Image 1 (cartoon, rainbow, N blue to C red):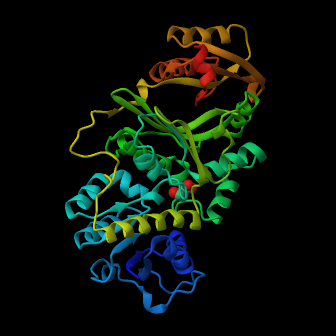
Image 2 (tube, helix red, strand yellow):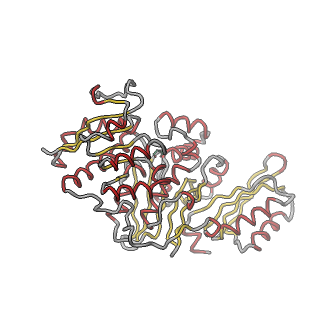
Length: 440
Ligand code: HSE
């Protein structure tokens, strides 16, 4: 039986899951593939630590380059994360004739162009299913299964840690800090959890998704990012009263010659499927012009779901190697020699609905002043409620707006904040609700 030899760099949570899968599901993989996936060597800076699986000692090394330069390895699997030395490992592996599998979304979002160009130059495959959505096969779906479609939009819950935190805040009123600690203990959070809660991990994944869907290069500077650190349980509660859950939602939307790409807390109506995606689960709601609506759902983080995606890439590359082909599918979905004129849309130009919470002194005329400022900017109010007395005589006015332009909302909110009767910075959360759009 033919065999494909694999060198694994990085024996952390995901690396251990990959090793476990290759060592334990060997027979199943052989039955499905008709060749064997042989884990030849593993490199990690710590080869003493007990990873909870039986790995033959002679498979382990601290020298990643002994794998990268080995003539006895066909595929290098990079699972160390971060930019360097991961970038150099991948470039050098491609140069030395290896195909590469990675789960490294931060690297692809920032250096994707360089890496995919190198893969093309050296005639090798660079696969990355595990970089987005953990075990959910969204890369293959967008790039291959839905190849016939113009993507009207893709909405995604892309970060398990944030979704877990928001679910706990929404259902149990738990504090942000306690929930984050639990997410770290479960192994969902990034090594630096700020990447999760500041929305950066979601933005890395959105850069890859936007690129695949619309043919723009992965570019973090084109993506608007707001995390969940400033979100209060008060707003999560008011949103619930209004019929919404707060989700950290990633948006990729076709706007003709421009693409909207943004990640931020978003009010999602209870009757949307995405509002039912709770805990560590991820989901992608994809609308194509041919297929219409599709939903992809599954575990977006964790050892074994992510390993499932990594091993699928290894299997695909193994098939390519034995068929004597590489580069059969453009890495980012589009032929590079056929230009795509789309550009990222600046956040100021987007239009959507908004939730506003403004702390005001409870006296006559304040609401009229605020409504006037919004009206001057062409911002129309859908509904307004006043919530009970807060400390120091302030009350909260909670509003939902019809569709408005982001730049108008920002200017109006600055003017409102400067009013004497207003205490503190107004809270602005974007809303994704097709019923509000229809009536505007
Ligand atoms: N920290 C990520 C998450 C893991 O919480 O979704 C997968 O990228």
